[in-house]
Length: 444
Image: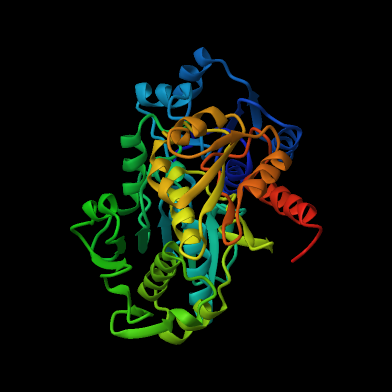
């Protein structure tokens, strides 16, 4: 890299880790942030880095002109003035993945998709560990990849690869790249659905004879992007190298586990488990390690988790579902073993069309709409199912419980972000669970 400064746009967790690595390697850095907090200021001061606060749109051409590369914070909107200035000045925009790969030669296993990334990332890492291959999880987690590579112990990194990072990567090439599924999401960040799709497809854009691409045969968008180069491994509920057959999960010719042995067996969960096995075995995991991890896997918090059952009604927390695609999967899964579903949905829309949720109308008894998007949720269902609007989560649970009948399920599956009422989807799910237990008097 040249001696011109690296320009960081945004100075939160990821770019603070990028800054630390750059400064330790002697590279000059200029950091910017549109809304700096005290912690960002303290970090910049501790690293001896100049932090430019709230630059105006007209400031970016000069800032970019002095830079060798621009590193945007994950989630920076594509319409941000810095990216337009970089394009006009022909200054490269790169990601933390590019830098990590430049600095560390150990293999990375990248997992992307609209839904299921965290599950597959964590489960694949557990399969590798159980096979005697030390793995560390990084990327769109609490630990950026540029921070994870400081650890000398892992033999490989399993990377949760968001579109935010992949879309700005110029040279990143994972040894194993998995694309799980595709549905509209993050249109508050990406300029269009096509831009979001291209960002996801970037996981395979540099596939070659040294890489393995893990492809979901059940998703037509994903399957249509199957690379022509390198090894390809497929998974699917009915067909694929990793598949369901005879009430069991199979990888190639090996039986991995009977479905009856698994803690999680909804269709989308089986798909995630097959994907994780495909990723892990492509990176050297053995059948025994894969099976051990599968049998131990109990799922993630806030993803179709049974909170309680009372008077024949089961209450499920699916707060992590922030897209219509995820809501549809949850309703279909819960509906397999419930009479009907009373859906609690809404929150802060991420620029998405919520109309696809109409596909699961047949599985619903009624809908409780919440948050900023309550009117949008109501519009989707009002002509086919009873809909009420609740002003608080407590009111939503009370309304849902009143409409549910014995054998039904009350499902919090918002299809929207949480930031209107909560600081995160986990806070939303925790509050829902607490209120459910209060409603039923603490009954399990």
